[in-house]
Image 1 (cartoon, rainbow, N blue to C red):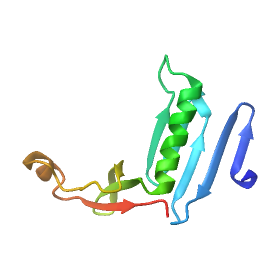
Image 2 (spheres, one colour; image 1 turned 180 degrees about the vertical axis):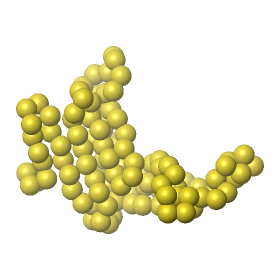
Image 3 (spheres, one colour; image 1 turned 120 degrees about the vertical axis):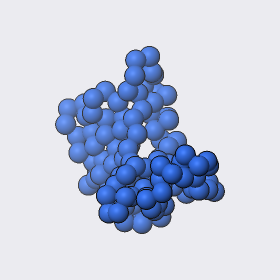
Image 4 (cartoon, rainbow, N blue to C red; image 1 turned 90 degrees about the vertical axis):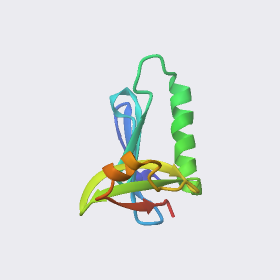
Length: 116
């Protein structure tokens, strides 16, 4: 694992490839934990009043959910251009829930990405 970890002072960054070939990274820069998978990233501890121990636990839980397949990543494209992404439950349907969503996303395609 040390080959994947870079430390600079109090900041660390982990970069690695998932079994599916996707990019995965974790950073502690800017006094927060940021977890990235493919085109998506999320922040833990970015607002005032959070507790570092809980932030680390929440980040670890998110990573475990990705690794176990409980969470996957839905990535939308307009043509070949990235248009958005979000984590989804493994059994979540990606069909538009109403006419507005259907209209807004009519020219987009979605690709579901997983850890393994």
